[in-house]
Image 1 (cartoon, rainbow, N blue to C red):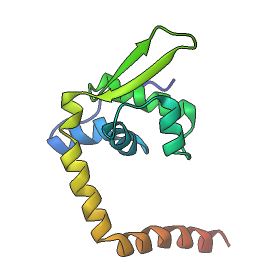
Image 2: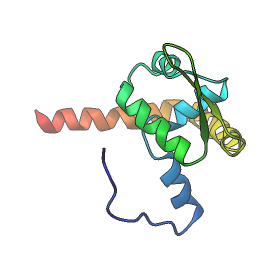
Image 3: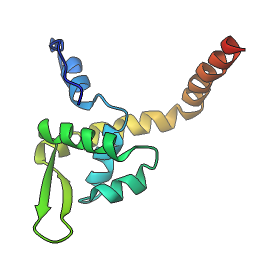
Length: 125
């Protein structure tokens, strides 16, 4: 597994939030867990583009950052569920607001994101 060798800059709140939420799938993982405790297989169904390995890494990081808890049931086969911590729940209103901003600017954001891919295709041709 990748180990960081350089300490991150933690000079302000944005640095701290970025460090905790950095990862392509973390915000979606948190949102789906917020809807109710989730097993990893349920998260894989809700986020089909994520690999099991990446999901497990990001869940572990979210657990290390005290945003989610993992409960292991002593059954065969083993059963694992994730829930938001009280600390993790404090992110939900912020994520909701960011989602509303995305909805409000959906067309513009799609245009600029897709333009990036079109520019890359033109440069490769």
